[in-house]
Image (cartoon, rainbow, N blue to C red; front, side, top):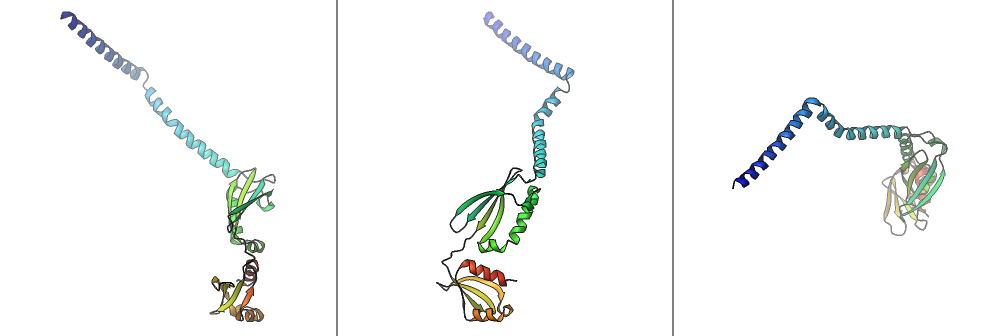
Length: 211
């Protein structure tokens, strides 16, 4: 029995010695190295700050990237009617050389607001920037390509031109073109129902007389 008590007492003493040693080590560390804990906490926070700094630096660098005469210009022409895309790589237009991404986006937005008549004739609907770098710029032009087999009729309604599909007599488009602002000969043609043979010809006509 005494032997068992001695063994138990030995375990208790060992436990007390271990706990006391750990406590003493903690006091020793705190006394002689008071800033160690603060440094370790700062060390754990540093990566987040470094990541933020790297991100800001990358953003600043990207904002200064500009196109050059060596930048290739890739055009994706998307046919909405048939859901197909054609790709073409050309030299970058001179007016886009030396632009940052934001400047190019603004230039493309202005292009969308006033596209050339040649683009409208092809059914141009939209333009967006897909990728931008010093080496390559990629844009996508969307078209609703004309169906040459489709014909239309221009009709005078309430002093405005309304466009109907010739084969179904369904309304295709209401326009803001006033009849009394057209030349007399054109006005007479529309009063008698003017036929248009294709979508391309229709948009040519509408573009010519739109205000």
